Length: 314
Image 1 (spheres, rainbow, N blue to C red):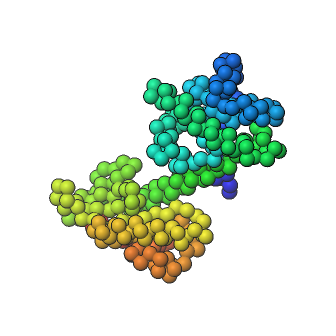
Image 2 (image 1 turned 45 degrees about the vertical axis):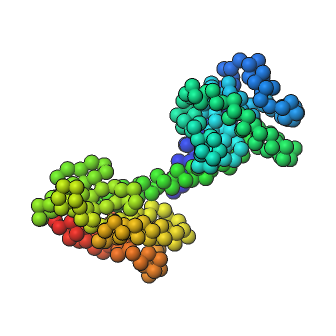
Image 3 (image 1 turned 180 degrees about the horizontal axis):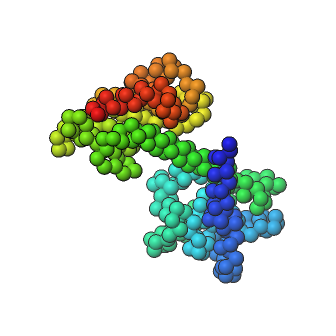
């Protein structure tokens, strides 16, 4: 089912109302046009404005001015996308735009940011002028500009979807682990399971940044035995499985240095070649597939369950 595409469609609808051309038009509609025109003539050379006018377009469709960003700070995202800058590449110290990230993300504008808007607009407009001068005549239209923003937005949406997919996969594995140890759980929340093992020691099963899930036994106050590091790769694209296993290997090498006894990799691709995977991630002690872990009658689930119970000591 095209669930990802349905998600993209819903997100795109929201973004059009937030910082694409629809949002720009809504913002301009409630502004004093004489003030906007005055700023356009101040921040944009006359030749560029005439070129746009020849094609029936107002200047703000390509050029940024302070009054627009003051009225709707999120529209900085429109100009960023139109000029082809990713968020990662735009909001950095190197570009000088790092301090403006909250405009797009939160719609907020501090006094310090407000005072720096003229410089920001001039920098954006230099790039916009260059782009206008290098576009073919038939490309200069509001529809084509809208398409350019979507070309930049696409990878951003895909990256966000991949992050969500990865987070979902980690949560699925975490839930499976909880089901296995539930009889010994002392307390738990969405990020940590605490249980008592047969030796009376506390064992923590936690979300972590790298690797994704860790199991640790408390030996004394602030002293732990690192038992298992679990790396979860939620992507379902078979053609990219080599990269994912390579990423897991890097994470497990770090985990081994941190003293983890076992390193496991869980993948979301059913057709994985286990021999290939073992060669590309020799640090991985066990490979599992999410689909098999979700099937309690599978051999992989049984092995995973027995390993968890044994290592946790319950």
